[in-house]
Amino acid sequence: MRIINFQLVLSLLLLTATITSCQRKKDSGDADRQQHGDILKGQLPVVVDETLVPIMKEQIDVFQNSYKESKIELIGAPEVKGINLMLQGRAKTAIMTRKLTEVEEDYFKKKSITPKIFQIATDAVVFVVNASRPDTSVTVESVLKILKGENIGPGQSLIFDNVNSSTLRQLKDIGKLEKISSQYVKALETGDEVLSYVAQHTDGIGVIGYNQWLNAKGSFKDIEKIRTLSVQNSLTKEGDHKFYLPNQSNLAAGLYVLSRPVYILNYQPDMGLGLGFSAFVTGDRGQRIMLKADLVPATMPGREIIIRDKVE
Image (cartoon, rainbow, N blue to C red; front, side, top):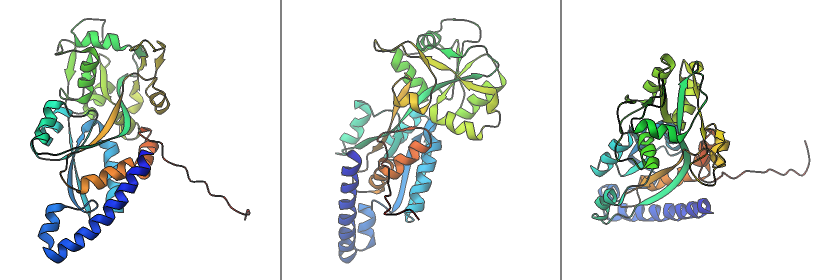
């Protein structure tokens, strides 16, 4: 229902934007139109959590091919840096795995900006190890112990893609940890570096985003040297304490406990390109892209059934 309503609103906005654009052109020319913006044309910088860059590149490519007068600049960054870029005014639209905090949002409230926020998919935190390691599973409890600096066994260290990554922040949130010990934790710079390290070493557990893993399966040259660990479903009383691998079906069923929502955060003050891009990503085409990429879309795309009178 949300997609239908949002697409109806988009249609009305398109009509309004067209009428308003014509009136502005008649009254004030191009300068006034640039000030107000258009929902399907112009330029838009979008900050993207770097763990989600692969899927958002695909979304942006399809959007720009459909709307030739649009130009979206993808700015990939670790979560902390990405949000800081928003607060610095570098971008007013972002793709993140969390909403802004009250303190962060106060910056926009002072400018009387009301955000338009939509969930667009479900991603997850994934643990990867060298394929020659004997272990095939891990518990969240043991991961939190490592973050606290406890020695739980040889080779039980964590390798993160970045110290400012959303994956590290999510694990800290789960464990309610203000800070972590660096004794058994290492932070590199990118997800690719984590994969390269794990492919060459057996002394650590890599921590990356699910979308990064999906992308690596088709592009990382040493992917056969890496495998994912299953995670015990034991964070809640309802958990069955069984172990589940990160995949689309387990995420959709709520069995993989380290899932996380993906949001599009639009803090544009007017009917700009950010609103049009939000409508696309939350609409049928954008959600279908999520589904085909093995992520879990926020709303299941509709299916078209063609009924013929006779078989040719």
